[in-house]
Image (cartoon, rainbow, N blue to C red; front, side):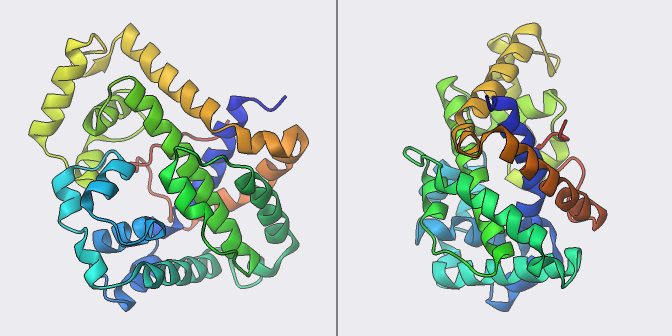
Length: 287
């Protein structure tokens, strides 16, 4: 029976392909080509575009772990530069260019790319998006051709599906955005400096998050206590469980085959330096 560990493994293998959107020059240039100057204007426009023209409160709520003031500096201003449709077209153009550089011109038309896209498509179509706004928004986008762009879009839908579930697991335990980062850093999944810079918080906000988690008994001297370790493990277990259903649609044999296909994709992204160590996404190495 497909297990929650499968959901975690396939996320770890597939996330670097999705993250081409964030860590490649091609995607930055695609944003600049439509007037989205600076990395963060592109980031917020590209990731929020499936939601339509939304304001800072919606982006802050759905992205969950960004400082509200950091979001307000870009949203809704980005919609004065581009429409969501233009942002969606630009992000695909950037991903397409990045894929062709990282994997070569032949890979998008390969049998391996088509098979990977077919398997991921089955999982994405099985995703229940009720209560998952970012997953629902991405799942509602039109189908794409060629297959490597559909693969990217479906992996994006699945990672947002997982992220929406992760946010629910945090919310159920009364953990806010900065608290989630403090726990991630204490657990060694990401770096404090990366998290503060890339999510718009400051030292005072971080200190407040540490104080609240310390009061709950989850931290001592910014290290996880036994209770804190158990809490982090429970959050991750809930996240894996809530992300499982789409992969169950594939079943064990096809999940194993997909893992075989995603492993060299992940290696190629890492070899191209398109996945930065210690980045704030906090993806573990696949087992």
